[in-house]
Structure formats: C-alpha cells, structure tokens
Image 1 (cartoon, rainbow, N blue to C red):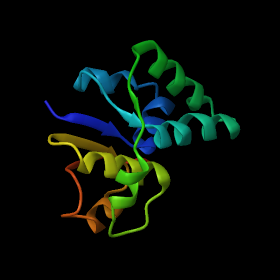
Image 2: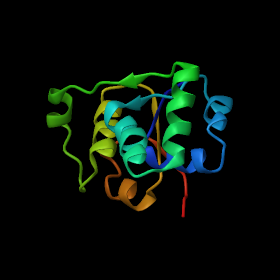
Image 3: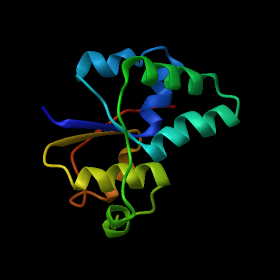
Image 4: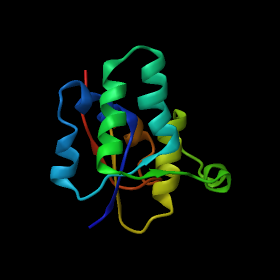
Length: 126
C-alpha cells in the first residue's frame, strides 16, 4: 500500500461537505506536511473558516501524522511550475518515498510537472 500524502485543497473540500472520514475509508492513514496543516488549519482558522476546526479535530481524533519536511529536501526539489508552500512540501517529500500517492486539487498544475513528481489523484473542487 502506498504512502498517501494530501494537499490542503482536498482536505478543505472534504471538510466542507463533512466527508473527511472518506480518506480513512479508502486508506489506512493519510499524511500531511506541516505546511499543508498550517494552510488548512491555522490559516483557515485566522480567516474564520469553520472547516479549519473540523480538520484539526479530525486529525487529532485519528492521530494522523503531520510530517516535517527538511530544508534540504525542499531545496533539492525543483518543480516545473510555481507551487504554494504546502504543495511544494508535499511533492518534495513524495519524491523521497518509494510508493506514494499524492492527493491534490489542481490537475493542471500537476500536469505541468508531469514526469517530475509522484502519481497524483486529482480531486475536483469548485
């Protein structure tokens, strides 16, 4: 089973529709980087987004991992397009893993870095 890494977009979308549990129904565990957690929870909370609390409580309840990505790994990763900090940390960490699936919400951005990144599962949000 691959390691599953999730970007903030799918987390926020699933939280908005009350379906974060779907992640654990599909995979035993889902990882996020510290940068993704900050985007989804800390920044979301600062903006008054109710889904930020939903994500935080879900992550705490299920004791899901929040990964620290070293500066060396971030520096070594050279994406083909500009990524936000959460995407960059997620893809940089993914490149160091053997079996990985990355959940993202931007197919176009992932397509631009095709061949330079891990397999991705695109979640469409509006």
